[in-house]
Length: 193
Image (cartoon, rainbow, N blue to C red):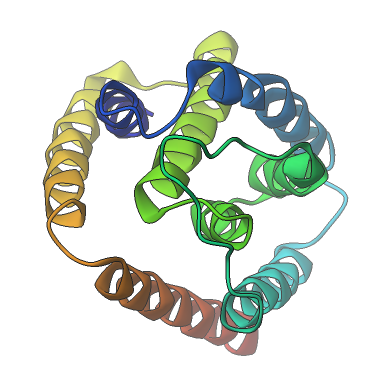
């Protein structure tokens, strides 16, 4: 939660997204996460792993097939046609979670966002869904959260600094590699429960 917010805040200050666009994500992520939580007992873990494999595979393939339109960094806005996808990913995240950020990144890429814009929107949506949901439900174990928070803040800030210094092609290679690693992990989890 905290690393997501710190990444979002840095990217917001660097004008990688507009607050108006980001605020539109709040109802989608909250209501989607809530719906996903309600579905929590409706599907087995194996079914959700299979769904994750399908969604991540489609997202990876779409990124190669549908090349994003080049966007002018200062002029790009979150298109309304992407709202149903963002809501669906939030439902998935509220129910299960693995690969949620990857699916969000691909969704923003396919709709013309730059890497840093996609990262900013992904971190904001992750923060709003996680923080508000867990904070309001009282499910934060503060005595251990401080250690995770410290590590994730350091990691997210290092990642942001590296992301600004390497090319979009290299960043996409990293994203594709992480997606493939996640797919392998999910396939192993399904094959050897």
